[in-house]
Image (cartoon, rainbow, N blue to C red; front, top):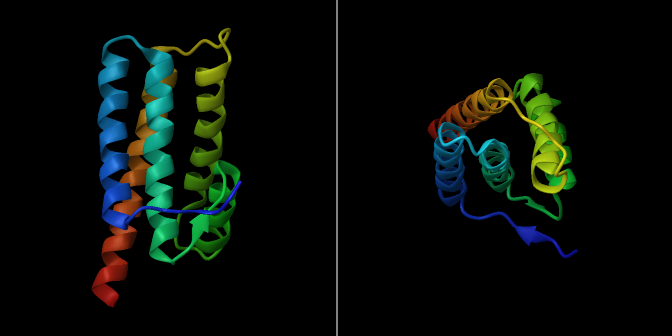
Length: 134
């Protein structure tokens, strides 16, 4: 796979917010598998905004997780809970999208959505602080 640039930071954040809103709507409609997938993509696009903020690109979802861990979590810029959330929700998303036997409860989905909300909120705050410092 060739290296793909992340989108502009604001575009990535807008997509993250949109995916989060979709996750909430889908959960409320009882479409739990789709809600899990959208919660993951909220975190995914939030993470892409982070990667774009350091001028990096990603080749895969695994590569994105590695870059977030290396450049933000290990450096103490982003809480370790967010690396765990990214990994956990990635697994949930794989199950939701590809495992027809997977079962998610409304509580499971609510937890994934809460994790996505915290991730997005913290990423937005981190990026705001970076802009204020520059």
